Length: 469
View 1 (tube, rainbow, N blue to C red):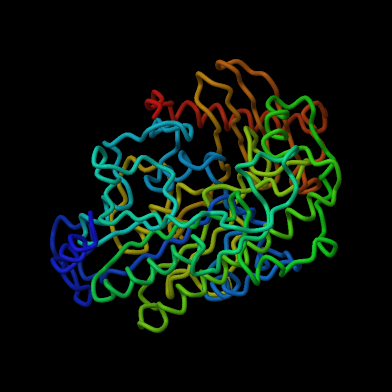
View 2 (tube, rainbow, N blue to C red):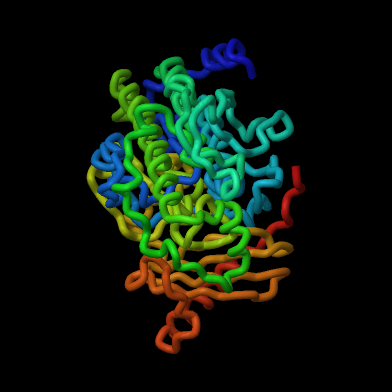
């Protein structure tokens, strides 16, 4: 849809300032319609936020969002790679439910997404930024009215670290000469602000999806020099590598095996810089909502599709693992009256919980096939006892995690057969430095987590994998 057609369609949508009572819209009688601004970054390690306890990084706008909303300390994605995770968020369903297990697969056009559901309630919708999914006429762009992906060069002319031999060329790290206005992070927000302004008088759903801090890690000035590598703390598990873990070679090769710790420190400085640049742009969105008087009636979410290894276990980017830096994600929700300001929740929550939460917060009905549960529902229901995450389909190498509040069990399979297991005590070993799978002292915990996994798999049978692109 071009811009002219989009604006014409916007004009046909009724204004948001009245009370709905129409049948068939999925809303309860007498409820007004809040806007939704869903801000998502790609590959953001939850430890790279000052509101999550990191005193070495500056993220004042995300800190503001946390101060004005609710921060979830233990949020987990349902798969540690982009496409299936994003689609799980779009649908509120596990990858095994949608059939999209990996980045190279298409998506089922019969699945109803957040845009489809809110469109039925009279919302106009846009996804601006990184989609990484099959967005086309065949699946009606997953229900979104506007799909836009700024085409600015991710790298630009700049100065990059000399990682030619140890770091893939596609994963450049260093300074870009692009200004924030020229950088994709800035362009995504500029288009998002235009969309908000154009639709300020009608209910809207905006998916604002940053490309960073995923590689290439190339922040603009002044963020490119904001952090001194020599002053940054590397994780205690930097040199703790589980050589028996299937796929460990692929994980380390993908990110580059750095010969010296200084390489990790240099990467970390630029990664923090890109996070701070994204934080600046998040602030632009929040300021615009304030300026337009929309903040009180807008649900704002900040999260990531998955995490980033960020030098833990000697690795960067991500791989076929269930380590915390890959599947533990930031999650902050602001909506006055529903999510109290300054509140921190340590209970387990999942990415698939976001769609039902948005529907619940908007007083809309939650479809029965959604795997997630509203984060408002625990007022009257119990919180999750376990979180599950799965990487790959049964015909491939798979990595499945069962996470309780205190422990994590990880099962690696090949062709459905057990290949390797890990068990971590997340209270006494939060950096996952010791696999206690063979420790007799954890036998009861291990049995509990294995039983929970078996029950989840029985209750959530896998769908056939979608076709590759």
